[in-house]
Length: 451
Image (cartoon, rainbow, N blue to C red; front, side):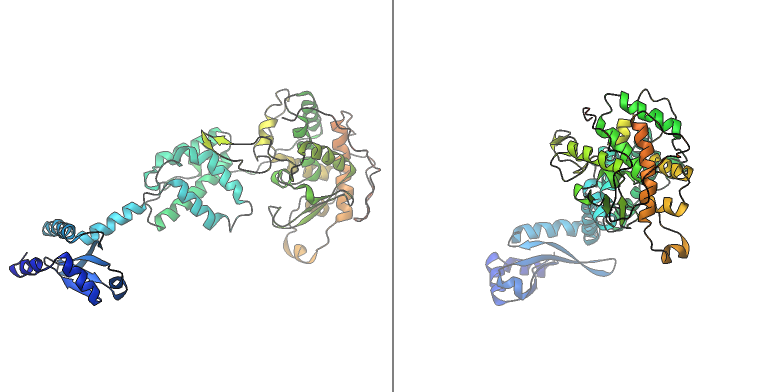
């Protein structure tokens, strides 16, 4: 500090500082580059900033040291002395502070990153964002959920993918890799970290190249499935009903398992799916055959007072020692596949719930149902200009086709399978407004403990 600076510093006291603030805006040096700065707004409130002004590499620089009166005159002089010493050693103290701020921003938990990314990019763009969140909760959070964003290494990504594949979900592993790439790209853009830990990973490191599944159950295998479900006490009647309804209605798993009772109209024998309920975002009215109505009425007995057809079966209060709630108000997406794993007497090739729509579609073809009717029954979009100009809903035709298919499934449920050719008298094509329930009686309720 120069002689002149020493003289200035001797004259400055806390009394002088308060007098400067009473006089209005202030920007005064008090020696050694330490400057007392206050706007008119701050001065009115008796507040100011301590700023160190210095030159580095031939350029004028500034570093904010703190606020007055939180930092006293004596403390500000000591902070300025320390920083001047660093500048003499070739350290740009303003740049050092900025870098420290960036590093501090990286001290962000992975859980917080996931929630921000999910809210910003997944919720607005995906039909069922809660399914993606549940996948992270199951496979990702146990490995990196407790870490800070900048602590995640490629080894953690590898563990996540291996864990998912070993759980028998290679397709989910591929999806997770894609999501993790995007999530950590977001972290890099936000400067929470400098690199993406998923760099270099490919589908071969996850679930491998995906091939379209072709698995479906033929008549004999469906009969074996019916027998195994009846005879496996731990399977449970409610799971059995879930399987029959998925097959009979040709819907996607979560379209059924997340359905609300209010969507079903038994007087018109219809189930109304809104655009928010379907994967394709296309609303659909599904005709309900008499057999299906009987199954649904039985399911509603199991569901009690819940608004959901398949409510959550266990009330979660704690998870890993911490207070928690159910991830879904309805049955979990994994429940039915887990239940199918209990059919130890079933000696057919492995299949999953996702194979049931393919099974239903294949049997509709075997029954001679026209492709446009069968595709509409599965809520598949009609391709090309046909889908634009043909807006007919095929309600009458779908009702007849689904009734014929449901009657066959009912025969399997009862252990008296109809001929494989499906040449049976089903319900006639009925007007959408006035169904008749004479084709097949509703299945008798067989009470068995729900599992």
